[in-house]
Structure formats: C-alpha cells, structure tokens
Image (cartoon, rainbow over all chains, first blue to last red; front, side, top):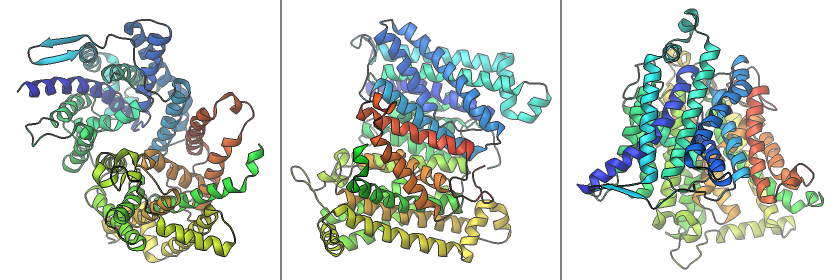
Length: 296
Length: 321
C-alpha cells in the first residue's frame, strides 16, 4: 500500500512534466496541424539555458527557470518567423513540415552537444533535501516540479478558457477558415501559440532536468515519445486532453512497476509502457480520451 | 587535407554507402512508391542483424541459414507491425513506427541474455567471452580479396555489397514497372481512388511494408558483416533519419536516385571530417562529429524548403508537398 502511494506520487511528478510538454505540442498541432518533432529539443534547450544561469552565472534556480522560459519562448518565436512561416507560405504540408521538424531537431540537439558537451549535467541544488508525509518521500526537486507544474497547468487552463487569446486559439484550432472569417488575426495568434508552447517547453525542460537529477542533450528527445503518447492519449489537438493525458501516462508508467502486478515491470522498461499505451490508444480509440471524433 | 586522398578511407565510405543504399531502397519502396510514412525503418535493420548474430552465436547455425532466417524474421515483423497499424492516418502511423523502432531498441538493450544488452553482440556468448559470428563471412571476404588481388577486406565488402545493391535496385525497378508497382503508386497518389477501383489497398500496403522490411533486414546483415560487432544504439532513430535524408536527397520516387543520394550523403558526411580549414578548424574533432549532424539537419531542412524533389527526383511524382 505504501509502495502504491509512493508510486502514485512519483507518477504525478513525472506526469505533470509530461503534461506541460504535451500541452505545447497539442497547442501547436491544434493551430498549425504540424507535429513538431523538435519539441523535445525545445525542452532540452530550456534545461540548458537554465544550466547557463545556474552553473555559469551562479544564480538560483528561480532566475534560471525564468531565463529558460523566456529564452525558449524566444527560440520558438524566432523559428516561427525564420522557418515555419516561410515554409507555410511556400505551401508546405504535413509531410514536408514533419521532415523539417526532424531536421530542426537534429540541428538543435547537435548545437546543444557542441555547446554543452555530451556528458551529464546537474543543477546546483540541494539534492539531499527530502520531505516526507507518512509513507511518501519527495525530494525538493520533485516537490518543486509538481508544485510549479500544477500552477502552470491551472494558469494555462484559465488562459485557454477565460481570455480572448485563449478563445482565439481554440477557435483557430477548431476551424481556421471560420476563425479568419470572424476576424481573428491568424498570424498573430500563431505567434502567441508558439510563445506559450515555447515557454511551456522551457519550463518542462528545467523541471525534467530537476527531477531526473542529471541530464544530457538527449533528454528532450527521450521524453518526446512518452510525451507524444500523452498527447495521443489525451486526444491530439485538445490542450485539456494533453494535460489529462500527461498526468495519466505518468501515473500509469509508475504504477506499472508496482510489485503487486506480477512483480511489476522492470523500471528500465518504463518508456516501453508509454509506447505500449501510445500504440494501444491509437489502435483502440484514436481520438484519445478528450479528443473530438474526426474523420480518420 | 592530405588524408583526403586515402583510398582505404573512401573504400570504407563506399561500403557504408552501399549498405545504406540497400537500407534506403526499402524506405523508397515504402514511402517513395507507396506513400507510407515509416519512421521506424531502423528496427528492421536491427532485427535482421540481431537475428542472424543470435542464431550463429547461440544456436550455432550456419551463417547462410541464419541470414535467410533473419530476412524472414524481418519480413514477419514488418507484417506484425503493419497488420494493426496500416489503417491509421498518416501522421499517427509515423508516430507508431517510431514507437515500434524504439521498442525494438529497448528490447535489445534490456534483454541481455538474448541480445548481449547495451554492450552489443560482443556479449552474446556470455560473460568473459567475446562472441564472434563473422568467421564464415571472413572466409568469403578473404576469397573475394584473392580474386581481386588485394588484402583490403573493405574492398571485398565494397564489391559484394554493391553487386547485391545493384541487383536489388534492378529487381525493384522491374517490380515497379509491373501492375503491382502501378497499384503501389496509385495508393500513394490517391488511396481512395485505388480502393474505388477495387484494389485491396491494405494488402498492397502490407506487401510494400514487408518488402521494405526485407531490404532493411538485408542491409542489417551487411552492417553486421562489415562491423563484426554492433549494439542497440547502432539502430536508433538517427539511423532511420539518415535513410530519410538519403531518399529525399536522391529524389523521392526514383529507384536509381537512392544510390545517388547514398553516395552524396556519404561523401558529405565523411568528407567533412577532413575540413581542417576555418571555421571547421575552430572545433575539436569530437565536436566536428556534432557539426556534421548539424549539417545533416540543415540538409534536411534545406531540401524541404528549396528542393523537395532532391537531386534526381520527379517533380511530377512529388509525394512531398
């Protein structure tokens, strides 16, 4: 029982990071209909930007995180103007944009390898500080990660539901032509979408780096497939779905190692659990938990 | 720039280009001609290589029977992947294939007893022994070297791999001129029209996937023969992306564009190793490996942005819009 509660808590921690990254992908897919394969590397970029502030400039994680969020949002916006918008103007469709995002992922990851080296890096934080309530133990990093993620998730949900921007984004996601006819400035909303997705990716990257304790330039890409699984589980194109999918997937991944389940899955196989969920959802219910039924 | 003239080095590059030609040819059949977004192609290469190595080292099969079995297993996995997933929409299928490829890689890494784990096939014979499956193949290359009058093993490999590659290219080209090939292309262009004309679209897609898997498995065998030891990370998504770069660079939808793409890619990838002038000289040689990956990424982006038909592709038969 104790083990179960601990696993649930761990699952919520990883799940909240999945959720943040998944929302970014979902928002971009919803407004632009592209699967951004480079999103994982946006996360890594955020993690390394925070490292820059934390390690090289000796500042605390708060500044590091804010810097990471700002820089990743900036990266996302710059790439929109330099890469995505020109490609869309040329009439590039899904396959071209997907392959482009693969190329971009490779470029970003390799630049990070050049700049940051291939070795594992750690933030300068207190790794020994542990909090316990009853049977549950959480490191300081895990606690911060889940607290910040949940705040960010609430903030995002409010943004999408209550603000004009959120409504425009949802309108654009639902029906781009109708949104344009209704007077929504599509280009501007797309930039805001990238800003939010980038900021979320930067935050998720820092949090992932925190809970993983050490990370290298491949971190984001390794997270990308479980995050895709979360997006699909929640319903591709649905931001709320991505949040739910992320949390559920994190919990499912952790629970799969529960020893009461036939000895549990060996922890090294956890990502495969995520892949199995991905494949299972796509085969059984492609629209995911909260997605809209759509012609496949 | 003095080493750039080394024949041995370029022979090696030629071998790898040949292996990738066979590998990318499988992808050309799947994507270039049938429109399947297979982003997990490396999995079939891994399956071909690992099945052969496991059968030779653990079950003591002869190399030739093990290789044939490996090709069969690769095809079976192609069918196993395709049966439940080919009905999915293109973008979902792409993601599923990546997941499939990673599952294979994780299985190879984690199942130490079966595959030797993360250290690779050197571990196949168990602790303390260096497993080696290549004895028979070494004899083949020695004999071919004898005919060629050389002592360079890579030269024998070069000749063998490219003969096989050319045979494969010709066979695929011939197959694509048959009614079977025309149906594949019609599926790529407009699946619904093909179905409306009564073609069993699913069966054809499955065949294309299986044929591509066969070629990838064959490439995996040659990879195993060439390098004598391999590990799961040799078959990561990057390997698949190289194949995609080669197919797009050469030209989607043209059989003989594949060796062109492979050779150009090989030259660019390997040749940049020798750039010891600025700005390349600013980087250490370890860093230059990452720089080469940046170049590959930029090539992909550049192709998509400026020349999606690649070097020799058919603009009319463009799948990449």
